[in-house]
Length: 340
Ligand code: F6P
Image 1: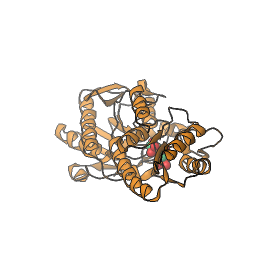
Image 2: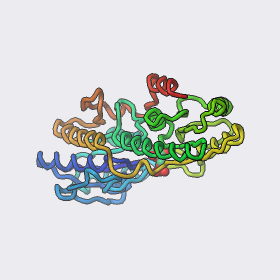
Image 3: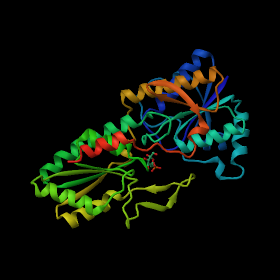
Image 4: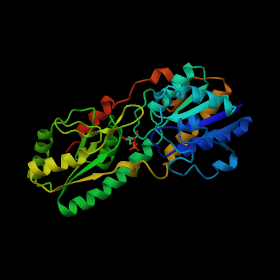
C-alpha cells in the first residue's frame, strides 16, 4: 500500500502532527508514505518526497507544514485533472490523504468521484467545516488571539483608548467569538450577526459616559459594514474567494470620529495562524492522522475523518461540499450575554 499525503489551503498549527501520525501508523501496518509538496500543485508538477519514520521525528511541535501548501485548484484548468490522475499513477500511489479545508476537500471529493481513492482530513483555524465538531488549528489560533488581547488590554487601559482587534476566520465568527468570550472583550462582532455602526458607537459612548475609559472590540475579518467594502476583489484565489481584511481600520476610524475617543486598530492576521500547535491540537491532529490510516486499512474511501462528540468518526466527502459551519445559537447567545 502506497499512500500520498498533501496539505492544501492556508496552513495551520497541527499539520505536521497529522503527517507524523500518518507516517507512524502506516509504518506499523507496513504501508509506504509519499509527501506531495505544495498541495494539489505537487500532483500537477510531480513534486513529491518519500516520508519515513525519521523524516517526521520531532515535528509534532512544529507550526506550519513541512510539506508546504498552496491554494491550487487542479479543476481550474482543462488539463489539471488529467495531470493529477496521471501523476498519481506515475508515483505508484494507491490512495491519497488530502488534509485541508472545504476547498481542498471539495477537490478530493471530485477526484473521488473520478475513481481515485481519497481520504480527507479537515483542518483550518476558521473551524468552519460542517460535520466536524472542531478542526485542529482552531484551538491554537484562539489561544494566541487571547494572549494577544490580554496584552492589548493593558496598553489600552494605560492610554484610556478603544482598541479594535481584527481577527481571521473568513465568513465564520468562531475565532472572534471564542477569543472575545475568553478574553472578556467588551464587544465582539461576528459575520453571523449584521453590524450597525451607529449601534456600535452608541454602545461604546454609553460605556465611556459611565466612566469606563477602555473598550476592547473584537471583529471578525468577514464582518460586513454597509457602504465600507472589506474585500479585495483584485485578489481572488483559485476557488473564487476574495482576500479579506481591513474592517478593523475602518471601524477604528469611524468609532474615533463618532465617539470622540482615541481608537486604534490591531490586525492579528497571520500571527495567530503561525507557531506551535497547542497540546489539544497536537492530540486532535494525531487522532485524525491515525483515523485516516485506519480508514485506508478498512478500505473506506471517499470520506472525511472527523471528530464528532469527542469520538473519531467519518462522513462522506460529498456531504460537506459547498457548506460552511457557522456559529451556533448557544455561542451567539453567550456572546450577547457577555457584551458589556
Ligand atoms: O482559511 C484560513 C485563513 O487563515 C482565513 O482565516 C483567512 O481569511 C485566509 O486563510 C488568509 O489566507 P492567506 O494566507 O492566503 O492570506
